[in-house]
Image (tube, rainbow, N blue to C red; front, side, top):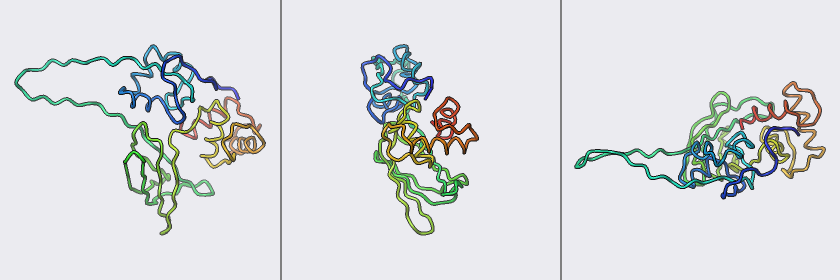
Length: 223
């Protein structure tokens, strides 16, 4: 595989990224906005190596600056309201049938372990979309199809960068191109899934992750 971001941990901060974490979750749990940490000079090496704040590798290192006290001038003896900016991420899931066609107008219930629940129907493109906490790790999607319930366990955030074999395998599996276990081994099953994906994208069918295949996989998966 050839991609611009490193398959090895990058960054030189004091915070070590764990599996399933991204810059948004690290920022949220340390009381910062994503942009504040991502654009901080102390994280320039990490930003250059990863390119996308949504995709970090376990072992990456993030610099966490000291918090600054913000002061606001206001008149005394009056009531004042201050709005604290919140932070959410958007979860998007597209449901397709075995022929690759969208599963539209299906009632669903989305549960996130951190306590948020949303219900609705998939749109015409089979899309489920909902805001979730940046540090959400687990969830469940329940689909009602013809009176029968389908349950899907969601392992949120647990995906490696697309420059790694495990990152490629996870994305291919999510898109329906089965690689089997996400084990980091670039074996015949993974190579076959890559070939099928390349064929679906009208790319040269080589079974290898070249730059064009990486770009297409990243684009189709959404991150």
